[in-house]
Amino acid sequence: MTASPRPRRQAVLWLALLPLLITLQIALPSKVWVVLLVGMGGAWLAAYAWARMLATGLRLEREIRYGWANVGDRLEERFTLVNTSLAPALWVEISDFSTLPGYSAGQVTAISGDSRNSWKTGHLCTQRGLFTLGPTRLQTGDPLGFFRVTFDLPGSAVLMITPPVIPLPAIEVTPGGRAGEGRRPRRDLFERTVSTSGVSPYHPGDPLRWVHWPTSARRESLYIRNFENTPASDWWIFLDLQTDAQAGEDYSSTLEHGVILAASLADRGLRQGHAVGLSAAGQELIWLPPVHAAAQRMQILRQLALARSGEVSLAHLLESARPALQRGASLILITADIEGLWLEPLSMLQKGQIAPTVLLFDPASYGSPHPSSKIKSALASLGVDPYIISKEMLDRPEARPGRQGEWEWRVTGFGRAIPLHKPADLSWKKLGT
Image (cartoon, rainbow, N blue to C red; front, side, top):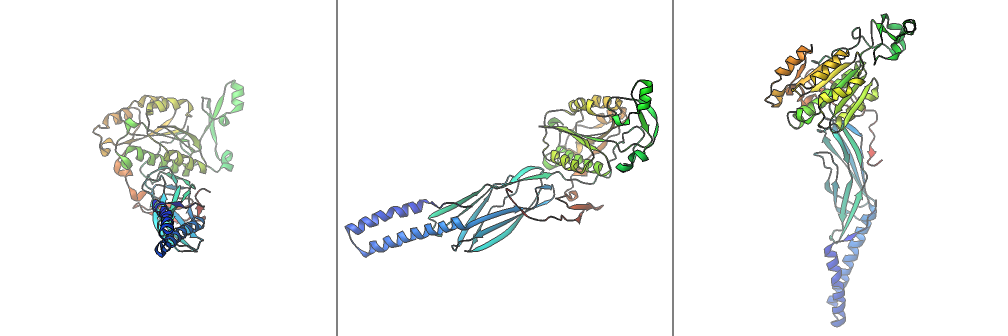
């Protein structure tokens, strides 16, 4: 990290006086001109030498511990200012160009010669999304203000802030499957613990591993086995991101609360042994097929962190996704749309043996004058009893525990988050590495 001293206006004016003093000394010799010439010239050279030493001796290191965080986590950075020269920096201005809302690490400090200063900054993450920390600019100069030294530090780090995961004890997902929801067995014991109770004709979307080949060969048509105890069914989470369907503002909107619901349900489903998928259509299409793996949780959280409202309706999304949904899956709809245009594609999915669970935001609690009684009646005619989600249910800052790195938390009945496990790797990582 090096820079070159740049003269300021007063340095140029000061230097411009030197030829005048030389001219006066030639025309009107006097010790006064000599003293002024030596003094002003010496001061100018001393200021340049001071700034030059700072330009080669100053170094700023910026470090962060994690590359991602949850809403509600506290971001922590460490800054180290090193001066290897003998000249002290009486003022050092640090400018931060991070895009994280509400966060700025800029400050003004000082450092003596041949020394090192360190400090930390913290910030509570309140908004999901993808942000950058850095770049950084460092400015200093000589005590006379003749020269300015500017360091542009291009190093930066991408910070992903994922939505919070909160406990949802009042929501039970309608189980899919042919013979009821079963506990997920250990993978190595699957074939020995699941028993069959007959066969039935094959339907498009049925897994080929369920085909009963002897019966299929005998009847010259595909037949699948019926299980007495099936594995946990797949969960498909469909999040409505249509702009016109949303209510509320900022963090207390149905958009943000819908993202929190989707993240929390995905986390629950994966912990319960389900393969969980996510679909939403905002500014960009989100399509993550159900997978039962530890990495799926982070994939879902990353997609939800970037989710933005768009123009695609929930009805269109359901209609487009119908061919890809397998029979026996559990479908979780999260929406604030009370117009009900999505009811027809939902009924078609029911005929394909898709088990729906509807999470409907209460429009009144979000300031909307439109009642939800009509949509609830229409859902009842389909045999669906929706969960009505009020604003107060999710507008709880104290129920945002977060998981940063390998942090593990337990949420008490009063909504307090207690850390159970701290990350093993607390090492600092430089920005740009």
